[in-house]
Amino acid sequence: MNLTSSTVLSAKDTARCLPYPELVASLGKAVAEYAAGKIQAPERQVLAYPQGGRMLSMPAVAQDLGVHKLVNVMPGNPALGLPAIQALVAVYDARTGQPLALLDGATVTARRTAAMSMLGIQALWPQGPAHVALLGGGQQALAHADAVLTLYPTAQVTLHSRTPARAEPALAALRTHHGPRIRIGGELPANADVVIALTSSPTPVYHEAARPDRLLIGVGAFRPDMAEFEARTVLASRLYVDDLNGARHEAGDFLQADVDWEQVHGIHQVLRSAAPRDKPLFFKSVGCAAWDLAAARCALQMAESD
Image (cartoon, rainbow, N blue to C red):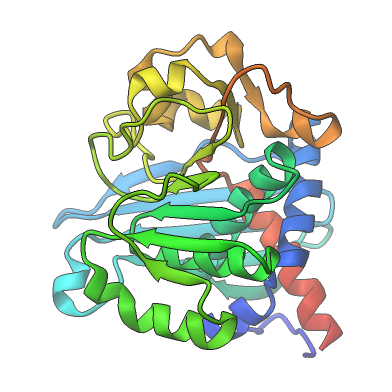
């Protein structure tokens, strides 16, 4: 694909340019750069629409690229037959400011969020998962299922959704691509060694105690008034986050548990050396524009190689 300043990638093309192996690798590099101050990514700015919904502005700048993601979160859209998330990611040359491409923002968000969870698994569960339980049935759960099935060819995936009928068409597509390793379940499997929560629930959906033989990953609670895990589970775990700055304001699981932030570690630390296994492990992902920049790097490299 020959990129020009007018290149606009559709959702399908954006997904094709963000294969999970390459995207996870790009995120790993960006995590280290962000921790070293080589990527600037201020806290997201949020504006309310008069008739409901919110606009989120998320810029990031590095030596090579600048990105600006604009996200509209519109809760009333599903009733209109439209996705609740409407978004675009503009990508710029950092030297000239020239626009390079426009990516589908919803696809970037879904795939880089799933890839960040996979980076957490890579860092904290290096033996790889045998059985991943996903709590939730929306687009993020489906993206996570795709990522797990792609990166871990022997892993089983169980999806726990309050509306399983809505998830079935997408699950059918995943089964066509990956085989019968994914199913919709009722009770949380006792042998699930990785559990990823991807809901918009304001109250905990995971009520079990922390276990040393199970990695917990929280993705869905993105406001201080939301929590997917019981405080006792959080406090009994060794805690990691993708973005410490953002987590202090947005990680509802941690804020409601009133964690000691001196005991919360950045995921970049365990990309260099293994995490201690003296306690159960918990990884909280809140998202950051630096991760969109990592996705943009991956997308440009893949598009230029076509």
